[in-house]
Amino acid sequence: MRLERPACPRASRLFSIPDPGQATIAGLPISLDEACRSAAIILSGSRRPLIGGLGCDVTGHRAALSLAEKLGGVVDHMHGRAQFRNVQAFQDGGWVTTTLSEVRNRADLIVLAGTDASRYPRFFERCLAPASQFGELTRKVVVLGDPLLSIPDMDGVSVSSIPIDAGHLGELFAVMRARLAGIPPRATDVAGVSIGQIEALLADMRAARYGVLVWNAAELDFPHADLTIQSAVNLVKDLNQATRWSGLPLGGDDGGTSAAQTCTWQTGYPLRTAYEIAGPRYEPLLFDSDRLLKTGEVDALVWISAFDPERTPPAADCPTVVLGRADMRFVQAPDVFIPVAVPGVQHAGFLHRMDAVVALPLTAPAPSSLPSVAQVLAIIQRETNHAAA
Image 1 (tube, rainbow, N blue to C red):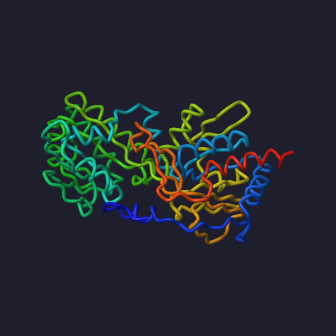
Image 2: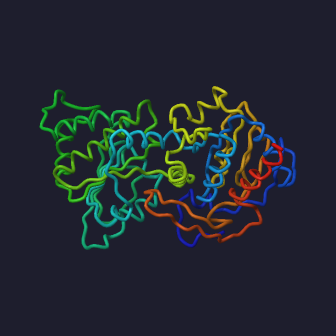
Image 3: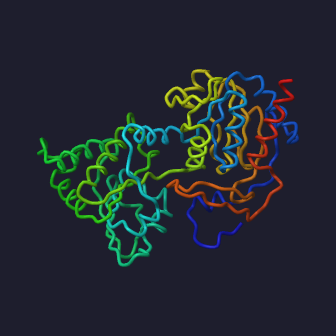
C-alpha cells in the first residue's frame, strides 16, 4: 500500500501489507478453527492466564477484557511499565495536562524533558510547525537532555537545549520548584546545569503565555522514574501560580492509550487488573507482566500484537498463544499462533488518540480475509465453553 505523503519510517514499515500468513501449533500449519480450539483448550485448563501485549484496536481490547473476565485472568499492556509511571504520578497527586490541539494553537514555550524527538516526528509536523489557528504565535522549544540532533527545522520556531542526563531531571525540577518558592540555591549547579541556566529557563517559563512540559515515560527508564514525572507535574502546578502551564505525556504506542481507556471504563481501574470472584482487582506492582511470568504466577499467556511484527511475546515457561501480524517471526514458535488483520490497514476500527481526548476512526484501505483480534478472541471464548464442558 502506497502512502500518499511523506511518512515517518515507522508508518512506512507498519503500513506494509503482510502476506495472509498461516496459523500454527508448535510451528506446524493448521486451520484457523483448529488453532482457536487448541487455544481454548490451553486457556480452559488455566487457573490464572495473562492477557498481555494488547496491541490492537478498541474492539480488540473489549474482547480481551471479556475473555479475561471469563477466565479469571490478568490484563497488562506490552508498555505497561511505562504507563504505570504516569499512572502512579497521576494517582499520587493529580496533574494538569493539555491536548494536541491546544499545543498547536496556544503553546508559545514547549519544554521537552528527556524526550528523543525522532520518536514522534508527527508531533513536530502537526503540533509545533503549523501556524496557530488563533492568530500569530511565536514558539520556542527547549530540550532538556541530549543535544538537538533529532529536532527538525521549523520555520519561525526557536530551538535551544540544556544538556542533562534524564536520570537527573527530578533533581533539576526540584531545584526549579525551590527557586519558584523563593528558596536560595545551595549549590552552583545541578548535574552540570548551572544555577544561571536554571534562572534563565525559569524566567522564560514564567514569561510564557501558555507553556507545555512534554515527556515520554517510556524513555524515562530508570529506577523510581515515576518520582521524576511526579516532580515534573508538580513543577507545572507551581508555574500555574503565575502563568498558564500544562503537561503533555507522549506515548500510546501499540494501542496503549486505547487499552488503558478501555480497561478503565470497563472495570473502573487502570491496566494491571485481574478478574477475581469478588470483582476486578487492581494491583499495579503485583500484576506487572514481567514479574508474573518470572515468578510463575500465571500459567498461560495470550499475547496480542496486531500492529508491529517485532513485538513478539516475552519468554515464558507457560503455554503461549499469540495473536499477531501475519509477518511476525519467532525465535521459538509459540504453542499456538493465529495471524490477525492489521487495524487501520486490513480492517476498520477505533483507537484513542495519544492525548486520550478523542477516539479516531480507522479505515481499511487494504481489506483482508484474516479475522480481527476481536473476532479471534470471540471464537476462543466460545470454544472455551465447549472445552470446559
